[in-house]
Image 1 (cartoon, each protein chain N blue to C red):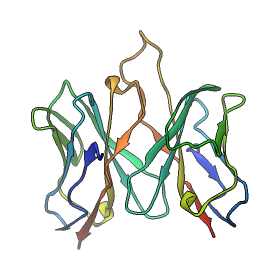
Image 2: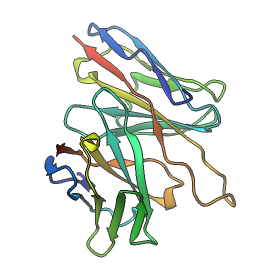
Image 3: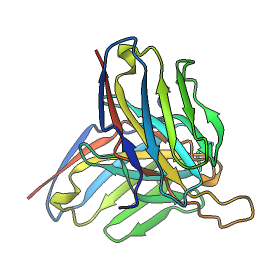
Image 4: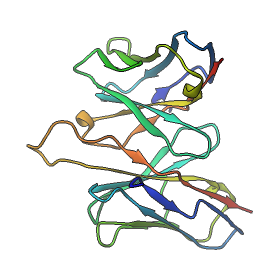
Length: 114
Length: 120
């Protein structure tokens, strides 16, 4: 039972364009969501998070949107850079983030072409 | 570098052998987590500690697995009688958790670079 789903295994975009990575979840108890980036041979690195009391959070080139009614979130990267090429994981947790038992999706491999 | 440190980076062992991994968290972090990642999957929660107390264990953590954090600082994860299905990347993470009544924003999990286990 995959509670956090990233249905696109890969995404390819041109440098300078927008990258949109999508994530769906099934557990309505999730109330805190995070995006992690992972380069080969390294551990996941935290990018950005959002609480369920918000529908948008922005940090520089990265924006996360949350649609609670659709149980969907997305990560926008604008403008995309070659260094953004990595696997992106969506993760969710319950209890406002105080319970850090994160449930991860399978990841989306983003390739940004120069 | 004051990030999460894991040793060894790679471990190759024969089926049936015991292995132990070590994790050194970020020094001021009071929570420590172990996750496992297999090919094509996201990390899966195994267990976590608050200081030296092990607060939760996943069903994935069979009785061949044991984790300790004896002084609330570093942690070890031991796998006894390894099986080929144990082959995976074992990730450690740490975070700073504020008790009830503290700041709302707990720190996100900071992951180490993992220990890749291959059981032959």
